[in-house]
Amino acid sequence: MINKQNLWFITLFSLILVLGIYYVTMDDDTLSVLAGNNDVSDVLEVKESDVIVALRVSEDEEILKQIENYQNILLDTAASLEEKNDAYNSLQALSNQKSETEKIEKLIKEKFKFDTFVKLNNDTISIICSSKEHSNELANNIIREVQSLYNTQKYITVKFE
Image 1 (tube, rainbow, N blue to C red):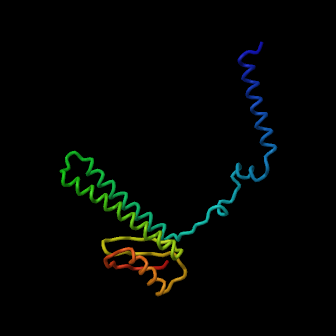
Image 2 (cartoon, helix red, strand yellow):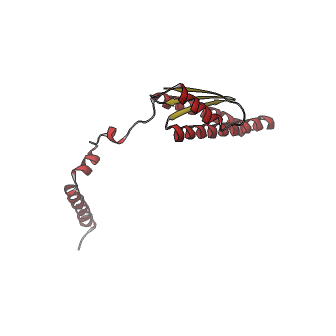
Image 3 (cartoon, rainbow, N blue to C red):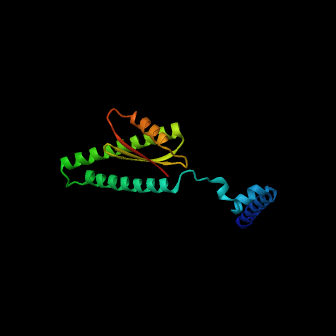
């Protein structure tokens, strides 16, 4: 009769045997991935410039701080109804601003194939494009495309990095 100790030994020995056979029959590519000897630079390509990434990160941090601030006001029991309404409206304005920014970035990406950073501030739109190629004509075309999204006059600046 097989006792528990022998049963465990046979089970673990079978598992080790199966894993050993699997390891021996694996090809070299799979082994190099498992061993961590793969070159990450071949797989990952950085397409955006460091300046644009840094600007996006700093903008996202500012927006997150503002959102947290407004959410604290909304959750504060001591805040008046007017303060809560202002905080809610500010949250909606931040959301609208973010969607406008994404819409402009998408437009420039589709039409001109540039990675961009867009900063909205009331009627001012600042655009930073990641491109080695730059000219006044290209900047004017970008300004015209962005202005076509709005009915009112906006002050648009384009900078190339």
